[in-house]
Amino acid sequence: MTILKILYWLGLVAEIVIRAPYQKTARTGPKTDQRVSRTENFVLGLLYVALIFIPLIYSVTNWLAFADYSLPVWMGWCGALVLALSLFVFARSHQDLKSNWSPTLEIRQDHSLVTDGIYRHIRHPMYASMGLGAIAQILLLQNWLAGPLNLLFFALFYFLRVPAEEKMMLDTFGGQYREYMKTTGAVIPHLPR
Ligand code: SAH
Image 1 (tube, rainbow, N blue to C red):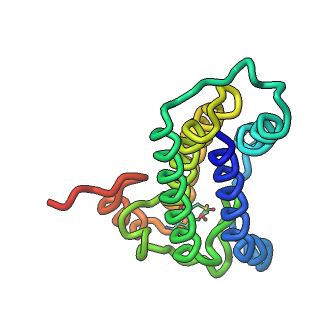
Image 2 (tube, rainbow, N blue to C red):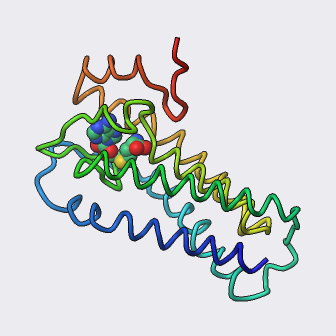
């Protein structure tokens, strides 16, 4: 259905617009730690191929039609709902993280540990929103190449990035981050006791 493809692209544009102001600040100011890994950059590259390049070919040509699948209409609309939730979490996490956001792992000289807003409940809302977006993609782009590949690459990214990021946060904020880890889940909030 064309409308689902249009929603997919609108979602991507919304993400770019939400992120744009933070992208600017992330580049400025001195950094005290930078942990860039080649493997992670490679996986990030794969993620962009699955997020933009293949969906673009799928949307403007019929070359990938051999790999189409068809889901019931209601599942397509579920995809739209999951996409909306993903965008909400994406926007909230950028608002809460502010200038502490960066595309790769780094610590700013003026870095502060954020433990409120959406970060009060989960440590990785931005990655949660990427995961939700990847699930939405499976429901919106009903094609084996344009749909599910992103979730696969996202899983690879997540399991590489999160341990490295938490190690960096522990090295930087020590006990403060350790305490923070006790009260939060990675992407699913702890149940209240
Ligand atoms: N994992 C987080 C943040 C992603 S952006 C999320 O999913 O929302 C990655 C950068 O955020 C890292 O380089 C790290 O410096 C910073 N960061 C991660 N958690 C943070 C926190 N609680 N407070 C401040 N900065 C944080």
